[in-house]
Image 1 (cartoon, one colour):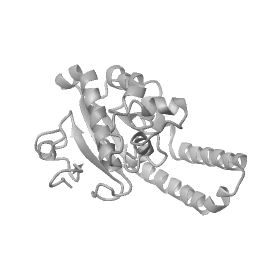
Image 2 (cartoon, one colour; image 1 turned 90 degrees about the horizontal axis):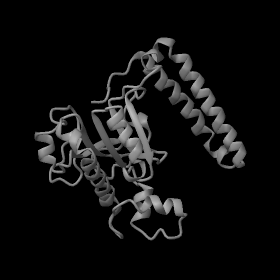
Image 3 (cartoon, rainbow, N blue to C red; image 1 turned 180 degrees about the horizontal axis):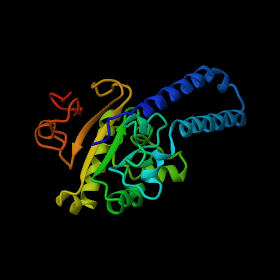
Length: 251
């Protein structure tokens, strides 16, 4: 579904960024004591250097296929949380993923962007990705009346249970987003032009599939693990992770 091949150039890029990341980690303690503008300058320097490294690794031919148009294969909606990044899901995101980000990985606050990906760019896949330790869900299950009005407005569109278990509500929220999208894009799904998926990116192993795994919990509104494994687009995909509350989750 999403490209798994990583060319030599991409591997070089990964190593380059890993080296840059190690440098930043070594500076973490020093940076934490810097003034805000010093930290900002350090960040901007990192962005400039990383961008220069990337552009030097890629030759002109790399950009030619998407210079004048985009043809992504998936519209992906995931949380603004800084711990969740596109490279967690694919090493070749350019012209492959049309990404939409907001707090709570939700449809309601980004319907125009999602609609653009599905109906204008005609992506055959729409994926909603929740994640472990989601701050939006943690806030939404509590009293968030002391937060700013813009934040309250976005949290208010999350249909979660007050006082509910955070992990359960993270999954519940993903199901809710898929259900809403199924109503909005019902025609595309029925015509076979779109599949809508719900998943959890678990960087803490809260859902017991392994740290950092992407775990699918919903396919076109179907939540039953056995049914998803037996008869869905995920069937026969090697090493796919399915389900977090099933009697026997597929690993």
